[in-house]
Image (cartoon, rainbow, N blue to C red; front, side, top):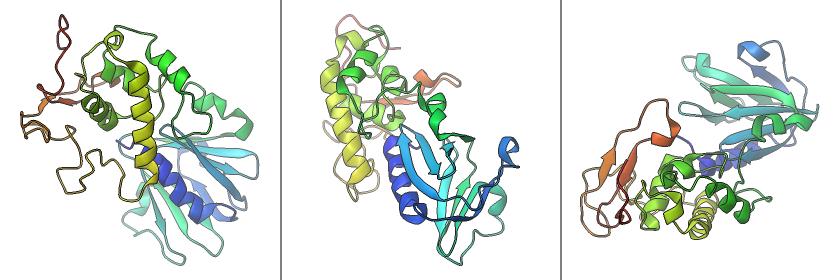
Length: 271
């Protein structure tokens, strides 16, 4: 699943292709907005909050999209188009005059809202380390509201901190030496927040660093634990463990950990 750093990088790509340009064609291929063409409007900016993308228009409207599990965007060069076989997957088509075309494919969330009412679609989110209004203190406060919650689940809760998905929740636990099932009250929350913010910013902005948590870009060695079930820990050699996710419960996504590097605190039991 794309995480906050992925969407931040996507916004940068769309910004370069669309910002400041008039839409020759602006189609929203979803039932709720099929009759709301954006033709003739000018794209004035892109912003993100966690995993949410906001495309702002000079008409006072904002296109709000979310990738969730299956969505993606592709940008074609001027005079080029999406292959005909793929075109039915396009939920958003933004073609600028004399420039490229951006296609939002299989987007599960496509909303058109007043820019002045963006709070209605992102106001529930916690602070985002990639935004100028980031507040580490507020993130710590929100993470600490439920002291008995599993730390991995607390990191995944977008109302606490916006932008961390399953990869980052697992990798941050490893980097801090925390078992994912450790309750929040047993964790140094300010240190976890500081590390998470630093990692997300680096991943979002540095070339070649996107979601590379080990510093090694070689296939299969970019992550400490995520996706490495049954393989030796890159730090101690112990086999990485995995637990399946619970469908429909976002706090119980697939979990990876190293039993040696991430022991449970005394008196605690694994979920």
